[in-house]
Image 1 (tube, one colour):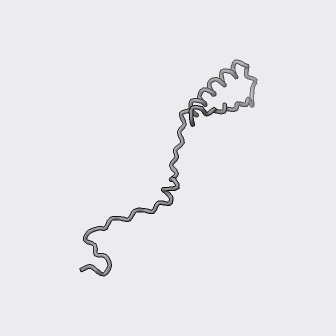
Image 2: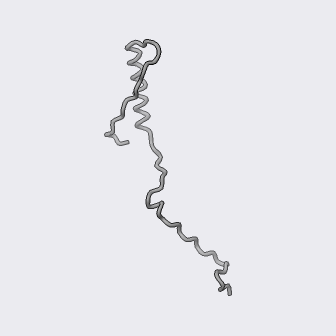
Image 3: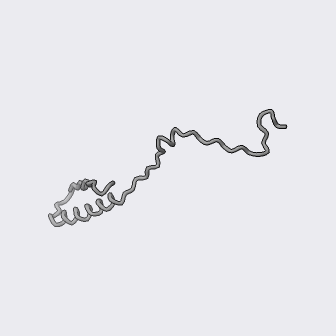
Amino acid sequence: MTPGDQIDPPRVEVVRGMPTDDELAALLAVVGEEYTREAEEAVADDSRPSAWQQTQRALRQPLRPGIPWGRFSG
């Protein structure tokens, strides 16, 4: 998220009771501030390998001394 991005405010729907205008304003102020703060601090973990890493062959293991290879064990 870059500083120029706009954050959509959360949608609040009253399903029970009859809150006053002051109560709704207080609720929206608190919830909206917390939502904005959390959205600004959120960091996505991009742990997917890049295209280069997916196509990259594994490196060959180093040769171990003392182990004969092929028929040339001498």
